[in-house]
Length: 77
Image 1: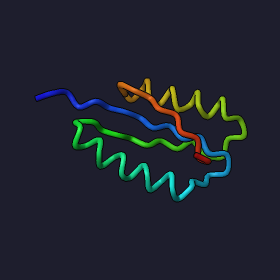
Image 2: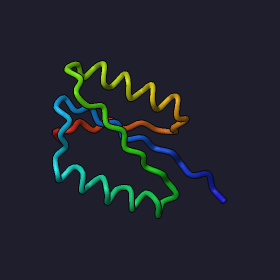
Image 3: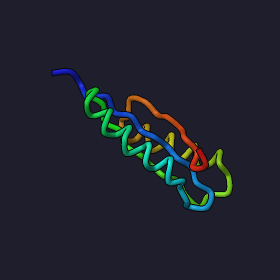
Image 4: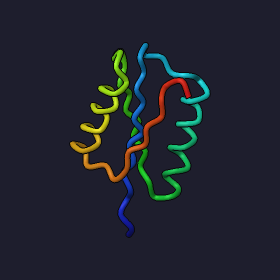
């Protein structure tokens, strides 16, 4: 059996809010990923005024969690 690819989706959010279209798309992406032998894990870094620091925190979570890939999608996308 093939190894499941672990993908983290890191989302920095200044005000802790996520767009409904983004969250809906993420749900469908998770479903499609399961069919492709992938595991999508969304991580949200909220209430940080510096997007650079929030992204650095996401990178640390990805490294500590043993993820194969990290994709950044900002909360306003």
